[in-house]
Image (cartoon, rainbow, N blue to C red; front, side):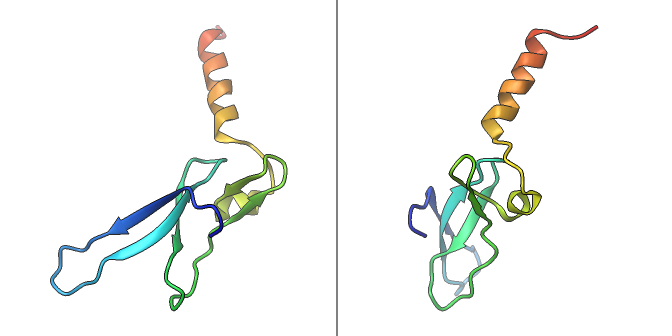
Length: 87
């Protein structure tokens, strides 16, 4: 991955199981952490896509929706509703 957002190391407590290392990024639309395979010999999972409206990495589920609704905008809408409750 060109610009990974993070890096994860998963250590299994079982004896003899090697640790797994992944590049990660956080989906801008739903705030999900997506693991990208770091080893070249393991096939890559569906790591999502790239939103051409907000120019950020997004997960596979958000890429399938085809709309741009960033998580930050969702939070702003929720805060606005909390500030001015109806009824």
